[in-house]
Length: 232
Image (cartoon, rainbow, N blue to C red):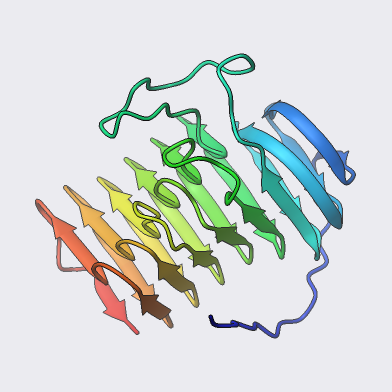
């Protein structure tokens, strides 16, 4: 057993957008954000299903906001894949964005997927998005890939922590994406830590701390443009 401790200053943030405030409690529904909106999770214990992003949105976790993800079921939600390659039922990611731009997800909250069955949900999935900022929060024990960025541009990830011990809890994955900057992050996974695939370029990792448990530090597939940098 091991204990990992991070010592950091509190974060105070006020969004300029109209904010929906979620107090601690059970939020057993899909949270669908409207354009030009903000969502704030207050300090405390939350149970959530999933969040669907939109254009020009902010998601903010107050210090001490703990989000436990509810194990999905077919009677409340339609699967996106049933069965998948492992014979499991897969539902929408905990946080997903498709064809979106100008998104910020930040704050010292924890998103814990430990209660979700193997392959039940992935963590964060961004597809064909632009101008994305991910800062300061933690993803814990995803049953499927933790952060997947596909066909995206101008992605900035800073001070993010990813923990995982299960198979397929891969930490950071970037596919067909451009201008991605990953700074001052921590990764500990039960599978691969960093994956880069296809026509990905201008990818920069720096000031990283990582702990491998089972598989690979880095996986480079297909065409990887080496104007990218890795600084550990």
